[in-house]
Structures are given as C-alpha cells and as structure tokens.
Image 1 (cartoon, rainbow, N blue to C red):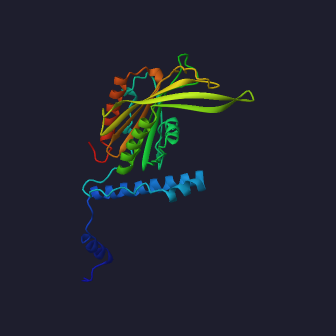
Image 2 (cartoon, one colour):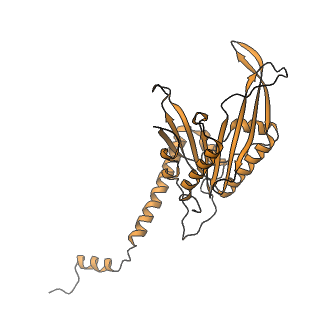
Image 3 (cartoon, rainbow, N blue to C red):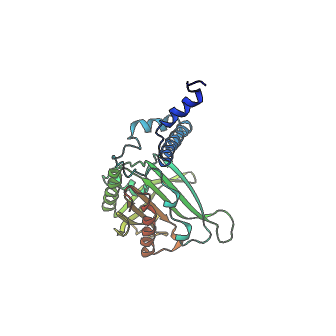
Length: 287
C-alpha cells in the first residue's frame, strides 16, 4: 500500500487548517458589498441620466460619505428604511395611496418663497445636501372619485452630516427672524400686457422643541395679490401653509400636510412626535 497521500487527502488536510469566518461575519460582508454595489450603480445611473451637471455637482461638493467616524462596535446606519416614514394609518387621511422614492445627494427642500425673502433681507441661502434621502406623497381621489387626485401630505427624510443638520435649523431660524412679513412688487404678464403686481407673505414660528432633538412648526400666511400697488390693505388668502421640521440624530424630516386636512397646531405637533418616533431606530445615534 502507498504511504503518499492522495490528492483528495491533501485537499482535506489543507481545508482542515482553514479558519472559516462565522456565518454572522459572512452575512455582514455580503451586506456591505451589496450596499456599495447599489450606491455605485445608483450614482452611475444618475450620471448617465443627468449628464455633466450632476457630475460637476458631485465633484464640487463634499462626498455624501464624508461623515464623522463612528465606533466599530456600533456601525453607522446609512440607507433610510421605508418604515422611517409615517404610515398611512398614522395620518388622518382615508384611503390614501402612498407614492415614494429614495435618493442620494439630494438638496434639502424647504420653503423657496421664504428663501427669496431671506435673499432680500441679507440671509443668503445655505445649501444642504443629504447623504441619503427618502420621500413619500400621500394621494387621495377627489370627492367624486375622478382625477385629478389630491395631495394630502408630503414627507421628506434626509440623512445629513451632523454639522449640516445643525446648520439647517440655525439657518431656518435666521430666515424666520428676518422675514416676519415680506412685500414683493413685480411685473406680471397677463393677456399680453405687463402690469405691476404686489404680493405679501408672513411667516412665524408656531411652535418649537415639541419633538425629537430639534423641531420647528412654521406657519406661512399668504395674502391675496393685488395690483398695481396703491397702498391699500391686502387681504389674507387661504390656505395657510404649515410645515413641520423635525431632527432626530442625523435624520431630518420635513412634513407638509394639506390645509384641506384641517389639522390644528396641536395635531401637527402630535404628528411631528409620531414622525420623530419613526426616525428613532434608523438615526445615528439611535434613540
């Protein structure tokens, strides 16, 4: 009988010396690779669709992953899970249909008219870009069940660098302090004729620090436009817009309910607290 080990014997002997990782580590490595593949594929698709403009923005702004280092014992969460959004059952809307999307490197969207006032009052825009984002729009049919559908509520959730999140709330407060009331005179073209037009807006902090780590409830009161400007009093027009902004850790959510829902300020504060609880599990650090 031959004493030399066969090829199969050598393979079995070598394999017995291999230190195999634990199944938990194998799954963790697979998840990390999947996340990198998805992120790279998404960036590639965005670059192909939007062309040079998107590529330029990515080169001139800080990369989404440039966040503060985190402990290796508690890996930072990256993507925003779907259950971080408000469920339809938590919103006073009957038979609403949610439409949603997720993104990378999205700009944080607040009130553009408020920012126009800020530009006029010396509070320049401070662009804030998210690392990850997720949004939803709740739609419901009109009373007769026909199109068009009605937007009942929109919600955006952004994962921001901690410094960006703090700066966002500081900037929002500066805008509200600078713009309690704003008159805008401009020219409007109607039926081929250019006429002067005057509009008026008012903003105020309806409530603050009612949910999460930071929170602001913004009331926007538009007034009916009139022209030409003649010094007459402009009457308040409806609807009055309400916006809820809440931060939990590195997550910021912006809620814009339809005025047709008839929610009171107390209802909106309660909705902000529900939104904060939904963000807790996905925030860095978690609640």
